[in-house]
Length: 308
Image 1: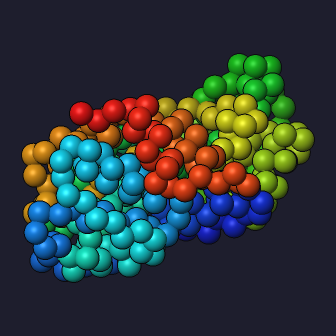
Image 2: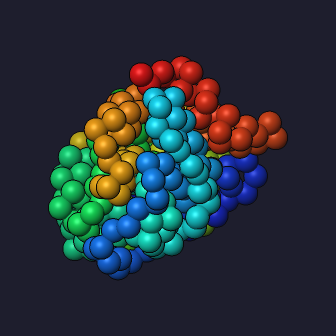
């Protein structure tokens, strides 16, 4: 998830998936005071941003901690990054699921880190005193280039580097700003030597973008990695070996005063189990006509991934 990441505006079922990223990916700006407070007693108060994916992750963290004998309370749907980080500062919450790349950008706008390990390392140094991130998960919610399976099979394309082999003109379906963003059309050229043109589609990887890719109006589409449409349509998300796209791994951000050895152990086990595929599946459960509430989605995931 990048820069203005992101005004996800979509319609229908995928609208909810697109709006997942609105708070997750909005970078906010500035930093709060380095003096940290924490909620009273030995209870860990877990918060979430105001979108479904964050609420699901909040419930996973909280339920896993509770199952291991740690007292937990919840404060869901606090708002966007600048709002919930203030809540962390004033002690209203102690713990919240975060996205590594955008959290780093919040504290260090000049950072050039893009790979998961580099972003995570830089983030640990950029955080204010009194706060820390625990182990990062392999799960990410980030921008991604996608092609149809037919296109992938025909041209042998599974990574952005493979696009150099394609002999037909390439068009990318994405928001208009993709024309100038460093991870967009310019980045394809500078990082991978790939020339492509943009078909502007202003729905942030939503149903119009998905339809353009399915119908062959574009050969590539920028879709956020946890959008259920990727899996539903069998799209192939292209690998990014040169880390053109900044990593957005899920990390637990916690007040150090509440980061006991037991809390760390439990949350690190959650991070070890969580995958991007899991997020896609859970987001799909939380959307549509048969919408399942975040607490129930989290409970089911923990049943399948016991954290002992």
